[in-house]
Amino acid sequence: PIIEIRSADPMAAMAAADGLPMVEKTSLLGKSVHAVLRPGADDPVRTLREALVVRGVTVEGLERVIPSLDDVFLDVVDRSAPAEARS
Image (tube, rainbow, N blue to C red; front, side, top):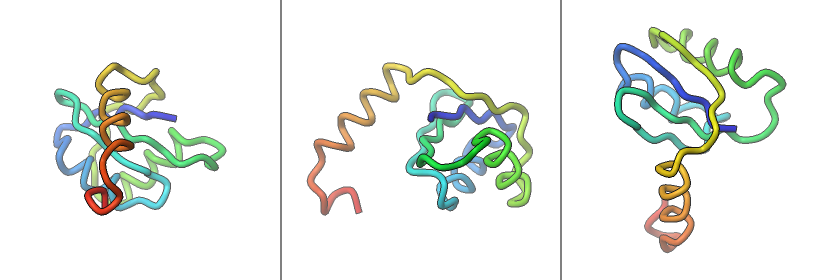
């Protein structure tokens, strides 16, 4: 799933989300962050919100979203990059 994170400090939210094992990758889209989650969480929105709050992020909103064209483009670019460039 892709979760949109809205925060007064989107860069801090993105940095905190990037450090979570449940998050595969993040991208900044305007003033929000899209977090692509790994499968497995029973309630990914609640789990992500709790993890961000514990890390000091003020979460203004969190919701599951349909992938945008930007999400799809970034995924295609990421998958087509050589493995050494992704690490």
